[in-house]
Image 1 (cartoon, rainbow, N blue to C red):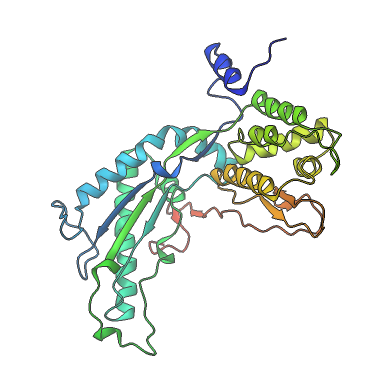
Image 2 (spheres, rainbow, N blue to C red):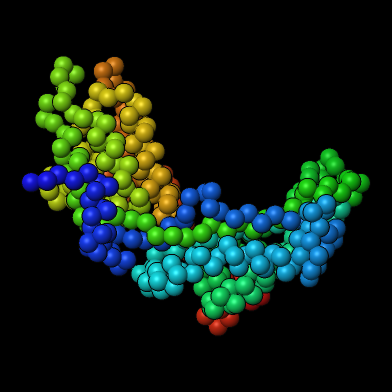
Length: 339
């Protein structure tokens, strides 16, 4: 029998066309941070619209035409992933990654009520530009709204302590008028069942029944390396199910059993690996370190899947992203300024 490492396993199956695009392990996730696009610019004083053309490097102003072009260039690479997965996620009540974030600033000088209105006007304007771009890419408005992380009503201008400062006497600060549109492109990641079986096998080979403070045959480095192959929350859940089916123990129990008497750095590394994979799927952190109270022994790992920790007595500690509801009669979020 010929043993393959993971790279050989994937490459040979791809070359033999045994791993297809339709593999059940794939899911839409954000690409790594370096791929994010940050569009930063300033509105003019008291302005809630950009000039149609004519950007200015000196003042940090971008034209409407340039902002739309940058938006389109940043969003277009994710179009195929959105088309393939969006409807499936909505029908199954899962949260699709919201790839567009808006940050709108106003000066802290001047009237607070006027600044608040200015912030809302700027947000409404930028949302309109974004919708124009999405329509050019053939997306429906309800889909476009769901790909935003916040509704315009959630944004507030810069404020000062009005009990101490008279904001009308403050000088205008240009930096407070800086606005940003951040686009986090969406790609696909996730291991198929064959790859999860491979990770399970690596964990089993690294484990040992000889695991005491006096003698230890567990290969912790192999365990860490195997877990590094996990890419998404679904991968973690699939591995957990695989371990429970075959070994009758959860991933949490396996790790805490095999990594007893380990250096706490090993535990922290595994927690980081699991949380990185989970955050790619927008699930937040699913693992944390439970410090040991014993003189002898290492810290433990608590893993929370599907909203609950497997370890009794440990409460969930993250909140899943909330999918915004869309008003079907207007194709806009409920309670938006347009309703």
